[in-house]
Every structure is written in C-alpha cells, then in structure tokens.
Length: 299
Length: 299
Image (cartoon, rainbow over all chains, first blue to last red; front, side, top):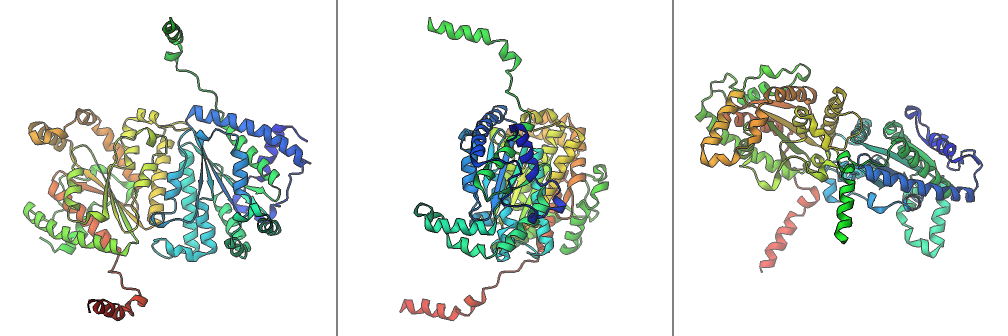
C-alpha cells in the first residue's frame, strides 16, 4: 500500500478527465481499483484519516471566507450518489455545507431558464455546496427523453444538435463565470456497470429496509441504459475543463468510489493553498488592552 | 412628420449599436433629434399611440407565455431612468411587468457572484422585467472606483485588463444564455451631456418637490464624468450584440428619449411575431357541449 500523498495523486489523476475532446467512457472500468492493491479494510482505514483531513480543510475554507466549492454528483439510479454524499461529507461541519437535491423542475422553475434554480442554489464564499443531480440533468434525462423539452418555454427549434451545443456552451460559460468568482467546481460521475445496477435493484426489492428506495421508474429508465451512456459521454466531453473537471469514478465497489471522491476533493482544497487567517494588525496590537479589560471586569 | 412605422424604423436603427467593435460614444449627440423635425407636442401625441400599442403587445406576450423581455436602463445620475420607466411602462398591465432597482449590493449578495442577484430577478416566460441599473454597474461604478472590488470575495488579481475582459465575457455569455432560453434583452443608455446634468442638479436644489432626489453623492460622482464616459464606452463596445443590443438614447430632451425607448421596445416585440394563442383542437371541438352545460344549469 502506497503512502497517502501518493495515493491522493494517483486516485485524483487517474479518474480526472483531462483530455475532454477525446473522452471515451468505455475506457473507464466500473471495477477499476487503480492497481494499487488496496483491500477494503485498508480502504476504510484510509477513509477515516481522509474524513478528518476534509473536516480541517473545510474549517479553513470557512474561516477564510473567500473561495467556495461546488460539487456535482451524477450517476445512473443506484450508482450510490446518496451514500457517497453521506459517507464523504458526514465528518464536516454542516454550518459550511449545503446539499441541494434537484428533482424534476416544478412549474415556477420551468418558467425560467434551466440554470436559474442552479445559480440560486450555488455556494456563497467560504462554503461547500453539493448538488445531488444538477444542471446536467438538462443534457442527460432531457436528452434521452427529448419530449421533456415540451414542458419548457423555449424559442426556436429544440432537440437539434445545435440546441444541445448551445446548452453545453451555456453550462461551460456558467461554470467559467463561477470559477472567476472564486467557486471551484468538481463533477463526479459515479460509473456503475449495467450488471451491478441489476444486482442493486434486486437487493432493493429483496431487503425490506431498502424497499422504499425502489421505484418502477428505475426499471423504465434502465431500458435506456445505452442512451444514457451516450448522453453522459457527450456531456462530459463538452464540459470537462481545468476550472471544472469531471471525474469518472469506478463505482461498482462503493468503498472504493468514496475513497476516490474524498481524495479528489481533498486534493482540490489543498491546492487552494489556504492558511488560517491572521489577525488584522490593528486588532493584534490591542490584544493586551482587551485582555486587561476582561480581567478587570471580574474584580 | 413621417408615418409611424417609418418613424419606428428610423428611431430604432439610428440609436442601436450595431457595429460594437468600433463603437465611439462621442459620435452620439445627447441632443440628437434624428432629423425628422418632430416637435414636442407631436412627440407627445405619438407617445400616446405608442403606449396603447405597447400595452397590446404585452398582453400578447403574457397570453403566449413563451418569450420574455429583459430591459436594462443605465445612465448617469439625473439622466432620467426613473422618469423613462414611469412614462414608457405606465400603460401596461402591472401583472406582466416587474421593475427591479439594483442598489449597492448587500452583505449576502456580495458573498455570491455579481450575476447571482441579477439571474434571480430575471423574467419568467411571458413577462417583462425592467432593470433600473443592473449587472452593468459591476463594470461601471466598480470600474471607476475599483476599490469597491475589495468588498467582493474574489480570487486572483482584480482590476486588471484581463479581469474586466472576464467580466465582459461573463455578461455576454449570460445574456446569450438568456436569449437561448427565450428572453430578449434590450439595453438603454440614457445619454445626457455634462451641461444638462448641471442644469438638472441645479433644478433639484431649487425646486422644493424635487429636492428629495438630490444627493451629495451625485456631486461627487459628477467629478468622475470622463471616467464614467470611458467605462460606458468600453462596456457597450464589449457587450452589444444581435441578441442583446445596446441603444444610446439622446436624453437631453426627456420627451424625445422616451419616444425612442418605447419605439425600440415596440419594434422588438413586433419582431417576435406573436399572435393570440388559438384554442387546443380538443377543446375547440367541445365548445358546444360546454355551452349547452352552462345553459342547462340555468334551467
């Protein structure tokens, strides 16, 4: 087993989509373990250390109050979005983290552009915002089921190649704007195999305390597996860039997926190079005075 | 005096900035009257007709519920933003129009990117939103007083040429996104001369019922007249485009400024080519049945 810093670099680089134009989803194995011979129990031990580190980094982000993080989770049904968010983020102070889950847009949301509710929910300085599903649904589920576009109040021809190109441009520009404002955007695609989804759906049916998560809609969407893969490939190809990279996370093994995700987040936050804020010079020079005031008050 | 349709074309074309790259503010005369020999009383009569037309077009926009309009008003202090909005829009149904005035951003707004409050306030389908000042303040007052950037939580170097270029790109991209979503963006710069501002400020001091509008800040900003002119020129040069044009309105004469603005709005709305929505075929075929039901109920 490698040292933690090495591990972080290996996990982050291997699954980050750097060459977006030539992105090929089929080259990413949902069972990939990065050839580092990590066992599940070793992975869980590393996870504990990483969670502590993430909590410290988030304290620093909050204390500085300048930069912010937007973390997008996407993936097929059962790919582990909820579980990953729960396990990766459960160690950090909730005061600095918000999770927004984007369901089907409602009537008021549909009267606005698709980035409206997204922009509103974006992070303010010093905070982390997690998107459980996101604006990418507007080039994923909507692309697989273009009839959904009829709900939106859109001008001109919809669903054409130019239309999707326009959406990709809008997303890329929006994330570029966010990055210029100090928001680092990270996007995780939890990549499971079709066979793994079959097992997980069966498990939801068989285990009583999992059954509430089963939905017949999942069965229906499963039929569009190939279309979704294609839509993901296109979306990632057009929107992965330096200031807002995609990570394709091998998600057949939940423990491994979480380990990659947390290290990618840690790596990003470390690269912000933030330090504990120092006191303003004016204030620092008055510390003795304040100390004396507080001591005198007791007398 | 020319016919109204001609007049509309003349006023709209003359003051719209079509060749943005070569935009030169000094070529726009604040006293320009478009060489059509219109008197003030003729102008006021035309304004009445135009207001009726605008009200009808807005009813149509609302009934169709697909496209929307975002109208930005910018201009130096006393240039007539409030008065223009009041006179141009007072004939339309307030149900379909919202005016948002953007003052100095507050603490919560400053924690987000400069387009956050702007995007939130944008129009939903079928509606007109007026911005009294706007996101352009972030490349105008902030450009003239770059120390204001310190309030924002921005990464990297601020106030450099690249920084302003980034803001122009963000604005252009944002408005492009809005246009793809069906929002037509119109931007009016109410162009007064320095001498005209002097007169209007004096008037505010002298007339008792105008005095509440006088502010010492206006006197201070007046000293930066040249810097503001330069900032406006740069902003218009970088952000006037087909889907979101700027209009430089000669605003020394209020009645003429309003006439140009209302005709530019009408021209834009007419070009949407909207018609009264027709009934759905299913519903249309059942009209007799419903009519009979309502008649029978009386018996």
